[in-house]
Image (tube, rainbow, N blue to C red; front, side, top):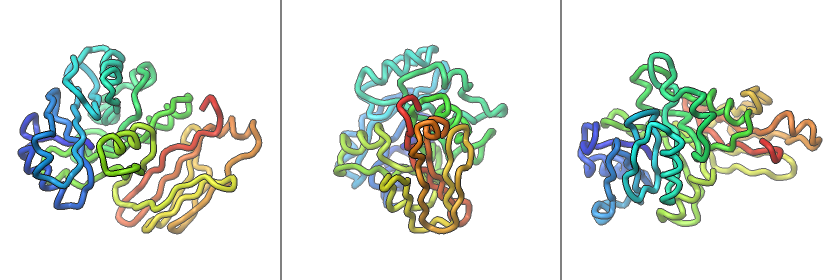
Length: 277
């Protein structure tokens, strides 16, 4: 859901990037060239992919993904203005690769805290594996969640060449294979993010958060301030949610990280435990 072609700084044509993802079995894709809106309509006849229109707003500040874009927006230096403009056209915004750069600070945390209305942040960005900084940003995610922000965690390739493809993806629980249904799932947190672990079910039932995978070796449950609450070896696990209101207030949220072979990870979205979390 974050890729580039020769329309901006990618090494492959738009058509070749689509063909690469299709060969790898992807169901949907959002191409997000820098500061250029590419209408995917003309490409849909030649691919099995469900194409979601997108842009990466890059100029004048931290990069912001515009998903389900209708048209190009002005890259205002005030990122609140950018996010507001994205939302106004019915699209949604994701704050990109916050820990990119020599100071691990492409998007300063004060910006993430000050800007409101974005759907989430990139908690993993694949291309940063070969650039300065760190591809992971679960630290930023937990800081935001611990302050009461309801934001989702996305994992993306940010592909600029074939070596960047299939590093990370989001699996959407969509009602159907259509742009509106997939976008709604991604906008509302009905998905998980992964670099290789497959989650087959996530459910809150009988007072517990239950996570089932096909290939995890360890599952860890994480709460407020990024504190590890429980670690379970195996492909499935459950975490008993607090029944006491005060305990729930202190925990605020629970999310799961599922670890597999070769460093593969999958991240569930947070389950919020109180109205203010």
